[in-house]
Length: 480
Image (cartoon, rainbow, N blue to C red):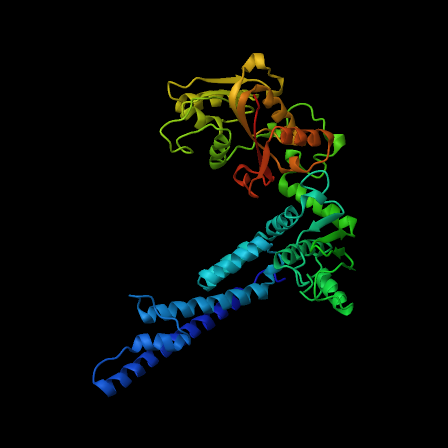
């Protein structure tokens, strides 16, 4: 891939683009004039030349919107068509789709379809300079998104590490071909392995593991419906089944290791959610989490979490009033969850171990809390507190540390402070849904018995707080 297309090349493309637009403008004016002259020759008065020219030049049944200037409408339509072609050519020339993940490609294609940016030399050069400069991060994000979308049941003990096999559900359509969505997923996975294996060129659509599978399947005469079939190449072994699922095995353990290191870096090994985050031998974490596990809850997510816990605020409730509750935020940090509850007039108890944060939180509480609210900030390690220290609560809303499964420890402890009928809403690392260490398995069983549920949060929900860790929200209600 060229490091960067030259300014001279882009300037030449811009000149050609502008020449094309100028010719279209001249053609429109000439044709509009011809229609006007024809009308005048017959009726001795002006006709509808611009409208006729626009419709004729578009060569379809498009018409300018009511009240729009036909010339402006036609030239803008031509501009978009030309700019789509220019951007597509430059992306292909720069081979940038090789570093763009599926999300980035889809966003790019969607923008080109609706409103392509003007392909001026300045805009093009700035865009490609940024893409080239960010290609490492773009590639890393692409790998993370590709693997995060794979079937969780077939990953290893935590959600940020792949094992030897994954499953692509519904990859084969009813008529025996690959579904587009899973085709894209597998090609992104394949692209990652080729890039990590010394930067080998990505195979085209007729090569690679999908191309191998389709070629061998046709040769075997199994092309008309879903059938069990197997194929392999240097990197992968795939086996399709009659239910449409495909099992994918990774043959290169060295590349699996590289992927896991990349995922750990992207999702935040500093959180303790890297490759070995939830392996059984590391499960019993002691002492505070690394950096105290402080990744602040984004404002909208904090309000949503309070709502899930039944703690209503003016931002989440449109009724005439709501009950005043006793609310607990453990490991409160700067109080991103607690402060909206305080402002809404609830009685709030915060626990925070770091002295400077506890002091700052008390100042923040005084600034937002109405005089009717009762607020207490306790400086303590939450895991060392007892019911005698804190009492019982109507609701617990929390974003605990994730380091090496500490979120499970914190939620289990928080359940001790719920009144009968009380609700808990907790942000947790996504691995809590599928890790297989003993305590996490037991925790999921407890959640199921209590009627709780996990809800996935969108990827990047905590990006503004400095981490790409995948997260879920646990909600449950304590029985009487």
